[in-house]
Length: 146
Image 1 (cartoon, rainbow, N blue to C red):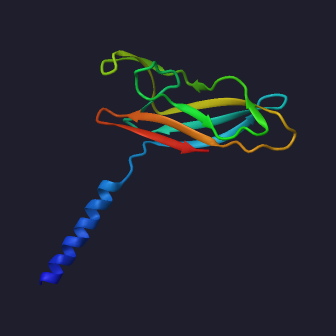
Image 2 (tube, rainbow, N blue to C red):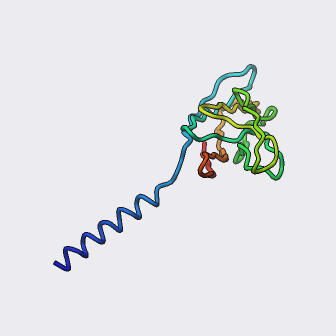
Image 3 (cartoon, helix red, strand yellow):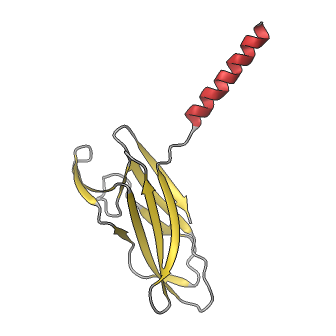
């Protein structure tokens, strides 16, 4: 009888640990490329944001939440051509917690970064997207490697 109770307690403990250890990830990413003219390519990063979450945009004032950002690891064979863009345009809201106007995205957002190839061969592009998503209850930091 004691062994049976101990076994049930261990199974329940493992179940509770598994439930609480789950990572909250309200954003799903897809990555693609499209030609953008002579030796140029648009890198397209599409985020699908689960309801009721929202993601902060690229242009967040200092002292605010963490903005979406794209960082590249090694840029052999290409250079960045301009700054990343976001589409659709974010909603601008007055945030009482940070006491500033902030860019928010709900549902879907696409970030695009143009690159210019500096060599004829194909290039490998890699890096990390970093972002912050919030609901009415909590905020989580996220990242996605590409």
